[in-house]
Structures are given as structure tokens and as C-alpha cells.
Image (cartoon, rainbow, N blue to C red; front, top):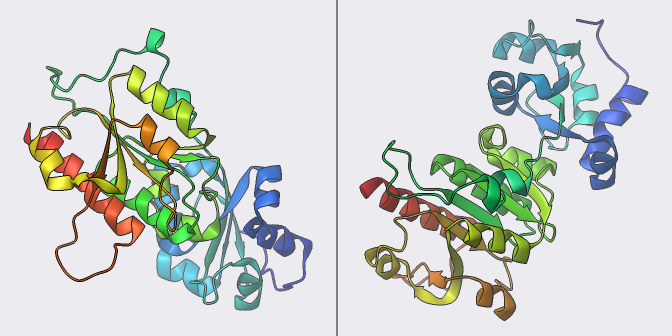
Length: 280
């Protein structure tokens, strides 16, 4: 533990604050982690990725962060405010290494990996993966990653047209799930779908033009290895995107709501798959 860092204009403080910018994150391979819950998840699941921890003395005592194996600095509230992306930080900020998963690990080449088997005798569940195509809202992206983690998904893939998963708002919205589920970034939708299909996945697109989700589940289409594709919040998926998938599916609205938030709809789709796979 070093002496108290008190100068909000210090070079170290500015370097941490700069991680709110995408170009700086891309150049350094680092990202900003805020809040005690996210830091605890990182310490438990991926401690080797934590580079630096900045914490106020009060927060260090409150959250038990005074004695970690990470390079830790005590800071004033003013310094923490200067580093953090949030308006009211909770006394804890960390610098973490980015750790994207290759799409080849999510969907290995056919020569090195047999197709997922829904009837595997070892009791393993079929695969479940979410693909985000041109999802731009950080809150939506982070919530979908969290929902995928909750539903037991194997991975989340963000195409190159989607928001950076290391955006501070995305990271916060995952509430630590970023450290639980593999996340692949920067890939193309067509290549990813082709890889998934070659391994035996059924590829479904969440789209208002599709068939009702309960009917699709009743057909047994959710029982096996499944990939869900979720599109842009305003425009959805293009006709070209939909032509690549096996089926378009919609979450029916039984009330008077005009539409459903993307992250909410994605959560429903992912959990329907999780329920179906566990009932087989």
C-alpha cells in the first residue's frame, strides 16, 4: 500500500481516467472497473487480470479491500471522482486487462471439434450462445451479458458493429458477469453464423417478424444447441441478416405495450432456451 494519493491532476490519475475513451482502451488493452461488486468478482474469478486498485480508506475498510494481492493505492474522494466514469463512485476503481475470447474458441473449426450433441450421455447440456449485432446501447449490451450468464450460456459474441464490451457503462451493467461468461468481440455476423451452423447449432434471430416464442419452443426447436442473434435497438436485423438464420422468433406481447426493450426480450429468449434444454 502506498501513501495517500491526493492530487486529482496527477499523471497516474489522468491515465486511469483516460480509460473511459475507446481509443485509449484499444491502445493499452486495459479497461476501467468501478464499484466494490465488480472488483470482488474480478478478484474471485480473474485476479490475474487486475493491474491496479484505487480505493478510499473508508471503502477499503468497508469492503475488505485493504489487503489484496493487487497493487493497491489509497486515494481521496476527489481523486476517485477524477478517475471514475460514474457521477457518484462507490469508493473503488480498478484497472484491468482486457480478456476477449476468440470466436474460434466459441465455435471451433469443424476439424478440431465435433458438433454439440443434445443427447450426450455425460449429462452435459447443449450449447447456448448469444450474438449481438449492432447493439449500440451500453446498458443493453451489459444487461444481455448478465442475462446470458444467469441463463447458463456458454458465450456472448459482439460483432464489430456493436458497442465495445469494455465501455465503462457496459462493464457496470454486467455487474461482474463479464468475468463469468466468455465474450468474443470484433467479428463478422456472417462468419460467426456460418461457424455455428457448421457445428450443428440452430441459429435463431429475435425479430418482430418471426414466429411466437412459445410456439417455437413447443416445436422442440430450443431443445438442442442454440444461438440467438439480437439486433440493433432501433432497426433490428436487416433482411440480409435474417436470411442467414434458421428461424426468426418474436416474444409475443400480451398487454398494451408498444414494444419490448431489447435486453428484456433477450433475457426472455435466453431463459426459454435454458428452460427447454433442462427439460429434455
